[in-house]
Image 1 (tube, rainbow, N blue to C red):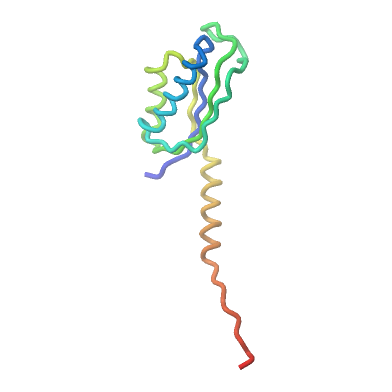
Image 2 (cartoon, rainbow, N blue to C red):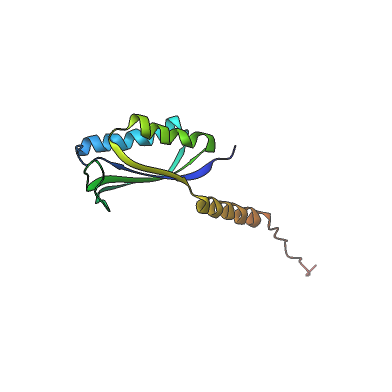
Length: 128
C-alpha cells in the first residue's frame, strides 16, 4: 500500500517543566517513527503560545508542536489511539491527511519522469 502524507499538531500542558515538555515531544515523535512506521519529513517545535480560549483544564496557553510525515493509511489511526491512552500531558491534538502535498509530490515526480524521457539527438556532421 502506498504511503500517504499526514500532518500532526499537538499541544502539551504548560504546567510541565521545559525538560518534561521536550520529553513529551520526543515521545510523540518516536510513536510516529516506531509504532506508526512513519517517515518524518518535517518536525517543528513552536513552543509556548497563547490559546484562542481557556480549556476545560483551565489552560490559557500551551506548548505547540507541528509535523509532516508519511505513513500507511492503515496505521495512522493508531497515533490517535496513542494520544488518547498514553498522553495525559497532551491536551489537544489533530492528525489529518494532506492531499495537497501528495498532489504536489506526484506532479513533481511526473515532471522528473518527463524530463528523463527526453532524447537528445546528436547533430549530423555535413562536412564529410
